[in-house]
Length: 72
Image (tube, rainbow, N blue to C red; front, side, top):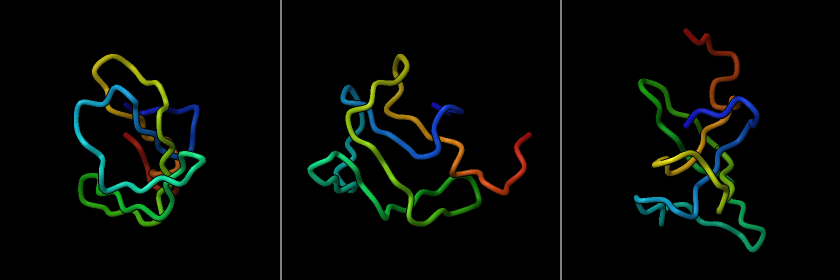
């Protein structure tokens, strides 16, 4: 789910798919992740754990992934 109200990313506690590759600290923050969207790869992406999201969504991606990139 795309979320314009946040810059980083989050994973839902009710997610259907595993996200074991994201390592979270005790504050439920996972730094230094890599995300691939379409034809570009983003480094050092921050994820927050246990953030609620929309129906059937496993998480949210914020606007920070698309900084300096045009959206159509």
